Amino acid sequence: MKKRMWCLLLSILCTTTLMGCGTQEKTDFENTENTESEKVELVVWGAQEDTELMNQIIQSFQTHYQGQADFQISFEVQGESQCKNVLLGGLEDGADVFTFADDQLSALAAAGALEPIDDADTIRQNNLSSAVEAATINNQLYAYPLTADNGYFLYYNKQYITEEQVKTLDGILQAAATHNKLFTMDWSSAWYVYSFFGNTGLEVGLNDDGITNYCTWNQADGDIRGIDVARSMLQIAGNPGFSSCTDEEFLNGVKNGTIIAGVSGVWNSVPINEVWGDNTGATKLPTYTCNGRQVQMASFSGCKLIGVNAYSDHPQWASKLAEWITNEENQQLRFEMRGQGPSNITVAGSTQVKQSPAITALLEQSEFSQLQRIGGKFWDPVSKFAENMAAGNPSGQNLQKQLDEMAEQISAR
Image (cartoon, rainbow, N blue to C red; front, side, top):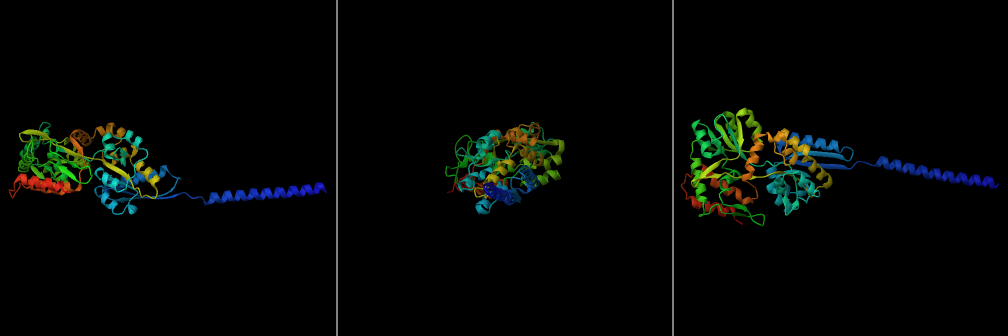
């Protein structure tokens, strides 16, 4: 009887245990079945010209992190120069990751669109100091450096211009006029016009408020005055070997043979080389004659950066993608596909990059360049002044008055 009761009790216990085990096994199975990868939707903004490159990079990112999330990443065209304005029009509707020019950094950070980068030390170690500086505000890194080539220099055709002539603007203009050809520069763009003022001791820049400018380009005393620069520009404009041309007009002139030298950037290296071939020359900007002396032409420099929207629904994945876009391998790919100058130290130091005439010229000019840190009221007054100089000051308006008006408008609050 006791034995039978014991067997019954044992049977009940075993049944209960098995039921418990079965329930646990079923629960674990159900949990496994119901577990789904996190759905990660990201939008990337970049230039039209980068479409093929960025799609390739996005695909490699998804392959690398395959299985860690259900990725739905799309690339949308958004011009880098207008990125800030579009993004600040609606941060929550903006891209998760975006390419932008470094002069937009302060406004984006001030608006709360960017958060300081966590792994800043690694980014600093891997990139050129100039690019890191361009992505930094008050010792805080706010974006990932992408390129270090947003500047300009001189392209010239070796068939018409010698290495000695190319050192001075006087020599270049003489060669152009002799061959009934042209040297061009876009005086409708204040970005390029800075070249004439930048190394004269006359100053322009951003005030501490990060919005307004200071400007002494109208200075009436000193070794070089504003009026000296204006007179030099008028003399250049009157030379038969000069023409103020937009970037598109410059390329058209290269293709039709009317232009043999011009100021531009690395983005035109491929089409220029296709036309001029072995005669393609690239070097720093020349000196120009101002108040009886040779003054080295200056330039604005800058970088392209990758930002992560502080309002992204997936900030960690967005940061991983931004870091992926700017890593060593993809900066190398960007150079190979787009000819853009890398900010990554290893890629920038590679033999392939050093053999690029355009990148070499940009590095030569960097000694005479300044990071573009200018408020919005700089552009229109400078363009207006320079376009009048390019036209030869047809109204005969007093040069000092024009300089005073320009400086006042640049510095307006």
